[in-house]
Length: 193
Length: 193
Image 1 (cartoon, helix red, strand yellow):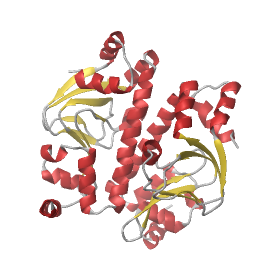
Image 2: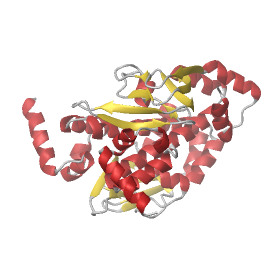
Image 3: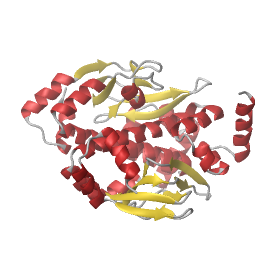
Image 4: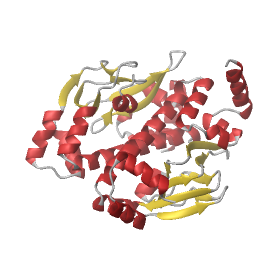
């Protein structure tokens, strides 16, 4: 249950066996079944979730009821409505399991306490925030400037096996395309290979 | 020249006078005149810039030559093409001074060295990254789900006096509106007051 989490951590910072035990005291394992929600809009995002297994999506709903996928999270990613997680304000995102998931939850308070006990954890969080920021920055640039093909390639770069795991209409929603445009683009790309 | 920088730092972490001197050794003051560039697309974003005075914009150019403003930065903000800054890859953003600016530049290497000498600096950077991430998350949500008015209100919340300082067509570009739609929206909002 903790395997991938500690693998991710120890790739960036060194932890003794004792420190790993301390970590476990602050994490809550949680299983979600496909289509269950980790967070619903309007609730407070009390936990950030590290994905040990499975895939989730974060999405917002516009005034007309349309869904817009903001982020996917697969193994090794952390997902939360960060604004809500930090401020305690109601979340604007829904976070839904797209497959059966095994998650490790951590609360904001637990995170701050852990940093006090194991200072190098802050280094890990900083690097994680940096990657998350860059992914978001790329996403904005893609929305503004990239062709449909480039956006699709960009998606695969960010989430390598997402296309196999997630229904096509969600990939289209993430890219801001209709499912028809997406399947036309994929056909064009594979014809050219 | 360093006043606002140390004010921002010491609001989050405590620094001795000696530590402040160490910081100064890693920072390069730089003045930019209005319309000068801190960074041009294709170059490497070698420095992150803390804004002591002035305002800048980061923008990308689409295939048809259209400009899209990704971010503004005013006093107290830090601006860079983070992906380029961290990886050393060419930048996708242009960063231009919108007013005469006083900046404090720090390189990626200097930042990492400073963290080693003054570990609590990492805490500051983590908080700064967190705020930057939230601002970007808000921006994406706004693009997807908010009405023109909400996006305008959101902009003012993120950058309080930006509307007084930046030409209207740039505000419109940031919001993804034509200048005409923006001025109609502003008129409607002020009529209702």
